[in-house]
Length: 214
Image (cartoon, rainbow, N blue to C red; front, top):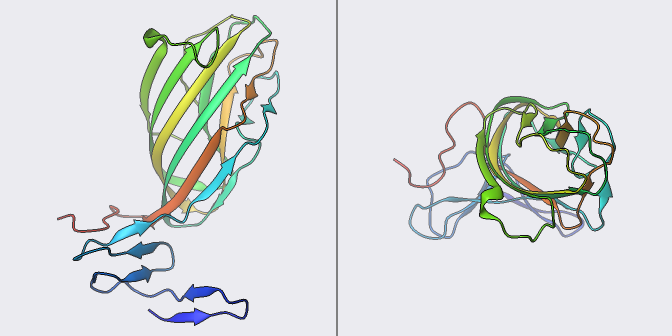
């Protein structure tokens, strides 16, 4: 590994093959930063791309895919990423029965994906407590997956916690999306504070093995 101090005083590591892990070492292989706090316990240092809504984002009253946050992120080829997100979506008008599906669009092509999704839904408010209104899924496709039963309620509040990994084949945009089965008559709004975080953890094509797993 070599170190470069750029003209703008940035501290830059040149990419190199990973040697034997050593306590106190900091490494970069061209995709991921690593640090070894003790022994040979090398670990990923998350270089996270992060997007958080600072104001509510109004969606559209349509039955086609739309962006949850209004943006997508550009990912690199041959890289595995870990991601985490919280979405809060609500509507207060429209009584056409519909379901909601979650998924990912964009130009990036995917080798595989797997994520846990926990959903809380309620007709009252985001903070109404009802343990019967919680569902949990494991999803292994980027295509839109229906995540709730049909509802014709004018008022609906949905909260999603998502954690998972995705292996990218060819790099490009990666867009968190939701799709309604029918235009409900009133659009959903993504609440301020909803966010998406994603960071590289290794190269695609094999198990990601960082640390002392054996």
